[in-house]
Length: 154
Image (cartoon, rainbow, N blue to C red; front, side, top):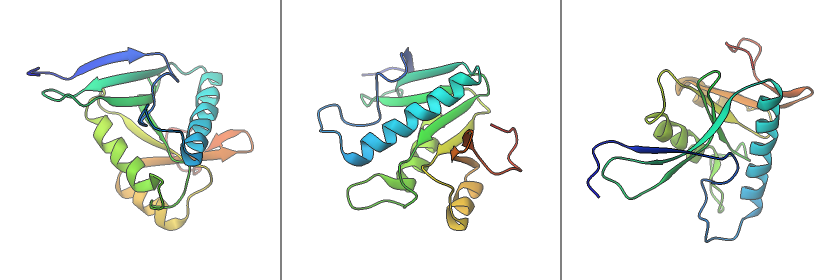
């Protein structure tokens, strides 16, 4: 393949995942997909225009999956079903942070990176997100929440 530009194809939300299609779905992956579905419903309920993409980088046969992009606010959304860095067969926070960095290269700029977590992050994870310009969000009493000082608010 000798393409000069990335190929970006919009696909229906919830039809493609950043997970091997030929592998059985793990408990972690199921929890991550449920978190993604919850956040999708939350964002749609707020009137957001949401999209999903398949991306083939220039000169590559690999295919990347953007599971959720909030076109209303130019927000790339990645979910992580744990607050742990990774290990024991789960992708973890490090994988999610790397995914945000990789995918953001192919989306309109400026794009805000959103990391959807299962619970409020601790100070260490907050620090990692801050240094990488990532906004952590998590389930709250009224949908999803983030730190009060986050701009723009969810």
